[in-house]
Image (spheres, rainbow, N blue to C red):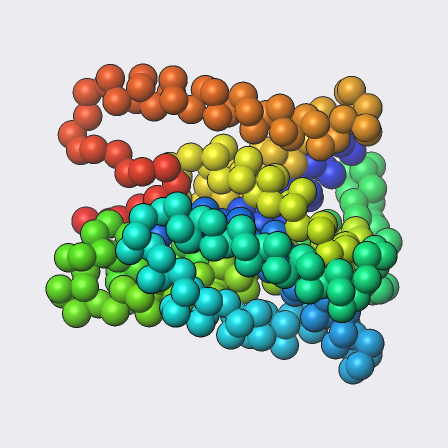
Length: 301
């Protein structure tokens, strides 16, 4: 059981990175990005091309992969999704679904349907910790997750751009009248989320395997983390990711490996069912100010 707990925490690091981008985009724009999982796999395939051409380490390839993915994502938000957001949340939701289908079809056409992985000396190695075997790539992933979540939290809460982001999240109309370029803030936020997705995709490629449609399963897990993270903002991605990783690992140990994903999806449904009840209970309690919407990036006053 100790090994299951450790593996769950390490898997939770990957899930936290996946959820970080989803949480950021939803918290700032209220947008559910259905293409997030496919953007992850784009990052994995780009890393695969770079490794084959330059013979570099997968983690080193992130220096090139992340900026490329961000540059591709920025105009998508700036010139497509931002305009659709003015019509409500449904048009951009449908648009991201279309982008998801387009990406997966393009990847299948370009690379075929066979699964592949990213070779690295630490992909299958491990080390002992208190009598428990710890996969090296899992430990690396957890460290990266903590760094990304903490860095994002500090950026959102303590920088000038973070102040603009919080203002655009709280009231985009008022923010625009104060001179904040809301469209630019949205585009940078979406690009940053795509960068996080690319990081997750490369880590998936090293620790597991990937194909054109691999992102869908990870997207569902990311949604579970976002819902579980609740109103705790960016940091909720980390706590939620660790919790989902533990639920998955311990659940599969108790029930069997074939129920590994089923445990997560059942937990997702249970959380969705309990969330309205918890929300009603929270609103029934006396408090001094109204709460933020689900997983909104908190606005400091």
